[in-house]
Image (cartoon, rainbow over all chains, first blue to last red; front, side, top):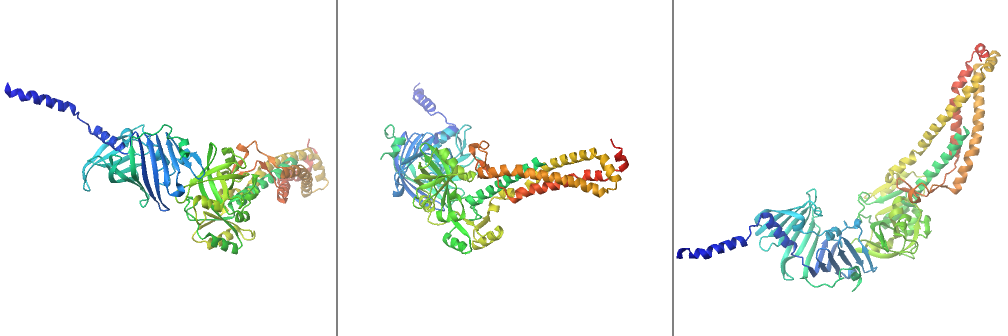
Length: 254
Length: 384
């Protein structure tokens, strides 16, 4: 009887461990990791300071931007520098984008025809701002590689859009570090499965209490000597923002 | 015969007026005789594909006896109140443009651009309607400048154009070229140099060659190459008139043939007597032709009397077609027409139908003439 006493303690413990750690399928694991990546730069709300550098064959632009966001639907970006463009603002509210132009003191709503135009002269389109999707919600993901790549332990995901997802990409391949799931690079393919653009993530540091890549560089496929680089300088997450903050009236108030 | 002749005089005048307006609207109002572009610009109108060294090119063209003007283009958004519309912003050199095109004469309301008022713009009439604006309305123009920044500024509508071309009517917005350069952050260059050849003695093809040799690294095309469809319409307009005339006069020829044959059948006994008295077949035929000629002369006089007055009246007052086109404008191959159609009476539009009437009469009377000439006297006298 005494021999079986330890089993009386061990068996329940084993049972508790087994039921507590539910077995996860690869699909569920992929969705969980992607959700963490989706939330890396997001919160209920956020506020930050960002630098954007754009290099094209025709011009080079460097801007300092102050940004606010609330969920997926609302965001406000105001140019702090250069002086010539100071206080130019972009407000996203649901499916609409408004631009405030301080020179003329006018606010215009971007028409549907302008959505394919580039945002602030960058390689992002106005449409990119509106159609901000969550990878975990809009794509089915499979893990296509897990192991060592260029000295880093990485996980590579291949994402295909879900049938009714309102997204523009036919496929995304995203590679993240196994430790912490910090993105390293991602490739975006159009509906014909042709590579459209590449995004590289670097400069990992603590910002707003999170370890995130502070620098994102977008390279268009057909113009490899061009890029748009975003660098987060400051970020605060889950802050209180007054109601009515993301309004057209707010655009003109300083 | 008279009715057909008068219709053809009026129709010929209408077509002459139409072709003249087509050519005038297209060339003189906006296109110019010849245009110069950076290679590939026409297929891909990129803001950055510009002709450089514009001043020296203009000087060389003027030395050769041409008038030339630089132009800059950009796409943007024009907004006024809640309304907005895409626009084709056109920066023009006011003084030079006036020597190359006559757009400045075609202001429906208000006035043309002025160097003294760089913030004044002129827009197409359909664009004005879409934005719901009139003279002195304020509009904001937004675009992307060459440095990637958002180009934007406030302007005042100083003029609204008459119909010039479907594109200009719907999205055209003209401003002074210096203002355009400031708005779009462009230091130098032109997207287009429009050239006109004031010397009508030099054929278009030769003038084009001369211009092309001055700017070998750029693309040079004349209006016929830029608008081949319209060139074809103009080239075939005479042929189209002839085809129309052939169709109408064929019907007239049938009527003449029938009437002449009937008159011959009714006079067979008389022709028999004439033949018996010694008239030769040639004399009979000549008589038939003389009768037909007299009829044709009378018909031509009536055709002139009926056809010229309405042509002259509408030449001065215009034929109102405003109920036909939508938005009271008519467009052919992208060239806009005023709803008032002015025929043009010329020597050709009058004489061509008249001469054709004589010719068709002569052809129609061949068979009746031969029939009358070959009548046998004995059978003819007894014909009932």
